[in-house]
Length: 452
Image (cartoon, rainbow, N blue to C red):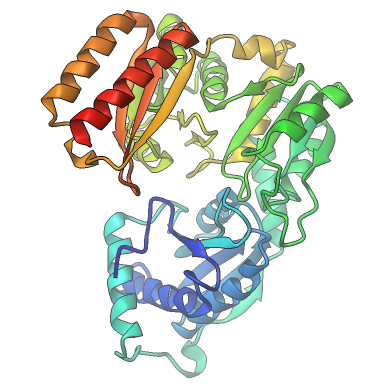
């Protein structure tokens, strides 16, 4: 069996790759593994289980709940809530385990299972590996050790989770949003209830789109992966800004009052300056990935804020933040982590903090985001090559050196082997788009020649 867990839990087409049997088995395995690790020692274990609105989440939630309860874990079902809400409630309620059913920005037929450890943090890789091993052993016939009688888990709905999460979001805000008209695109997803509620209670005049989930329309032409409707709505309503979430609301992208997109790098830049001003940007450092636009790095240098870069993936950003005690990090895609208030990317929290900065300064989001200039970025995927030789090919190294010499200090080259496909990604940034395209094209040819 190949590794089930990816960088963000287990995902696949619901009822094909990710079945009810798998959801139940993984949940039982997770309970047994955490019990082995001593997580449940001395008390009756509790888990928080939430989901996004996908139709498949209904039967997968039932399977997860059944698995956990059959393994002796009491379950609090919080219903449809964002991934960061489930992480928050896992921590705030002192639960031993959190489970979120969502495939994030993926299309509706997909779904996924993500486990959180005590405190709302991502499970350690070694625990995920152990869960896979135990799951595989038992699906091939080894019987589970099952509690009986009063030792079986009890299940109840925990509707208070909605209010507790909204209250948490509002408690974090440094100032109110009175006077701001804001358009929210909820992607017909998990934040369709909590996000408008939080923004409204914070004082904003809220207009919503994509806020009518029916189980089938999640991420369908809306949300952070389809921004055109939000751009049009912001201009149409004369709003100060727009905020877009993905299906499980762990990311946030924005739109300024002119309808221009504000990406994750720009949001990080705005929040970094705001947090430094309030004295909460620890070590005056922000964490981002190597895919962040060079314009972000140059802006942080100019503003005197240190930048630490990691491999691509919000899990690597979070690991660096936790290890070194930094308060702010994120990705260009809109996963922004404010570690003092969240253990994962939180799109609603990010949007609220961004709007709070607009309200507090009286400046437009366009003006605030201009702290950095996005340099033109060209990405070319080169398929059917030996991606394992990216770092060892002398010919390719020479081509990269030549490209970097041509670009100088105002450009950048990045070659990345895909984690899932036989291809290499060539990314080039330059002050001029034509130069970026030219250099990227030549490097793509060099990759084909050297690794083909």
